[in-house]
Image (cartoon, rainbow, N blue to C red):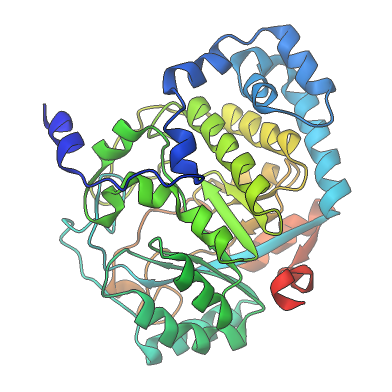
Length: 390
């Protein structure tokens, strides 16, 4: 009964014509689920033979019917990745600016009801973090915060000019903003924005986002459209694997990607594969995706789009990430700290967002990548191709 009440009290933005919320409003979750549930072996063979895959082909490759073809999928995935990106893997570090949050999310350690010490970095603390991250060799970082009006545009406009001179690539994963605000941040150094929808099933989304601005399903859903309208160089998508049926959510995200690619063809796109990890006040996954199934999903994404950048975080184990280097990934985080102040002496002052699994030093991860015949890239290697720099 409580879930039904939430469906009524959570505010919802109206669908905006032409943006993905209007597209999703016409999509049936049940009909989308049938795409992968009705797949047979012949459908998989057809998908594997194609050079350009459609949504049905993607559904075929993530279906149970494709499991016997996993090695073939991986071989093709590695071939396509090398053709498009060469023998390279880029390394980046997440830099958490704040764990202050006004949202109530069931799966996140930053959730507002958790009785934890909150920390938002000031200029002095930020300088220490920058020095610590640079000392590890990173030239590409992802800025992360909780979602609150206290850590919003005035804070970003003050901090980004202090950060950008030290890094060639600056990405951001914060609360959704307006197109004009993204444009402003781009003007002071922002290169990429990641906004993970968590799940594309509205009812499930509302069951896990109980209070705060993040409970506005449509506003978050249309954030990538606003990022594209602002002309941001790269747009990142992702679902939190475990909140809902991972296959259906992934098909929905594939539809979202195709929508964005048609409208904002001058932007690059990336996808990530976060699985629910333990955290303060965390939940048990509704839909468990095994290691083998995750490998299948990763290979399917590469076959679906050879130009897509794919990122893997330290949520995954060292053993899994060792094998992942040859699965089709272009980017990996390393030696991640998921709390503000995590790289400097302020590390113990605030709770982390979630537990990491691969805790190896960045040098060890870099050596592992090289031992597999890959070159480590410390920065985004083609920012000059962005129309914003032309």
